[in-house]
Image (cartoon, rainbow, N blue to C red; front, side):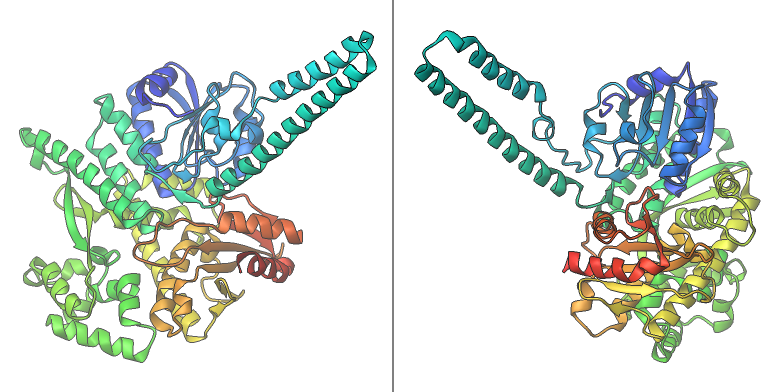
Length: 572
């Protein structure tokens, strides 16, 4: 059921208990986890933190901890399936679910005892009403019982009367069965409409921050983590632009409140102070930690606008730099080393030139943080750095080790790790840019009728990086934008994209991801989750639907052909 008073129904319940905390591997979940950890430290709540990468992990983690714990908190996992059916818990186990995945499973919504949903009600949830989905079977059975009872009692009555009575009872029973069939057909239709599309709601970090705020325990660190959580949803394209703008406005009010509160304090300009500011900054990735030239080349927005994979695109970029009047020597060196005179009004110069090259949206609403006088980061910088650490494939470390490192880089005491993440993010963004360029230039994107399809072959440079869902998502979004900019086929511009990349060569599996069509007004609703399930079912393809995002699956290489054929038939 939905929790209406998050403090009373969630925090006050767990504050004197031991809690198991299951956290999914995405940046928003990490940020929500940091906020909750801070609150638990304040009140000395004992907890165990367990990273869970998918449904199998969640099941294993629950089996290991169900004896010791009664209360479980699930962050960004668990809302979109029938959790009691999946985990089969004891009757006294209670699950608090703070999850952005939609739609929320109806059984979770209407379970009053064991499932507590920490989900904002003002999201467009559209949950069907209880009577449309659940029906009391006892009524039907009672009705049938009465009819049969009357038949046996009436044995002493004349046979004509009894026959007429039997006919009435039979008619009533047929009528009830017909009504039941109609209700079941309508229920299937309602559930299909409700569960058809997967999408994302309000950031989990923001929900947790608002809990801290209600209890007057919110700090600047918590506020910064909630900013990163919302920014993660924007970077990985999980929410519509309007939703992002609304959430940013909410956060801006909190930022003003905190900055105002600290103006009176003497240490507001001390060497280790933290200041969050609202910015209308450039859509250039990591530009303050890179050279301006590298950042323009590796940002999907500028790269797709210029079509940098072509010779004409490179020429256009040179024209753009010339129009800004910036010396190439300055543009190609690290941002920190550029002349102060150039840096002072750099945003205005870039925006002015970008407008001439039809890049009207080069600036975006975001936040920046200053740690002391030396370190300045944009929220998107931290998202890219944490994601790169979370999915690091350079060293053979376990996913749990990477999870802890990504969690650590969010603390202001661990800036070395954040800088390490930024270096990894640069390599990842370069790899994405090169892969997009090679896919476009070698025509690897095929139109399959109802969708576009691209398969990365084993042996492609950096292919190991794209066996991870966040990296593959970024590549997929970037590739679809690039393809739309380079194709002349108008029909292709409204098609979704399915991408496959090698996952485990020895097992012969690929990771498959589907994203909805690209458009500025898109509501980011993804229908591939259900489509993948149906296609796998109808062809008996060997698939594993283990990810919390239903639009990401694992598939046996040999079954790829029949699986795609079934998808084409299904979506045509």
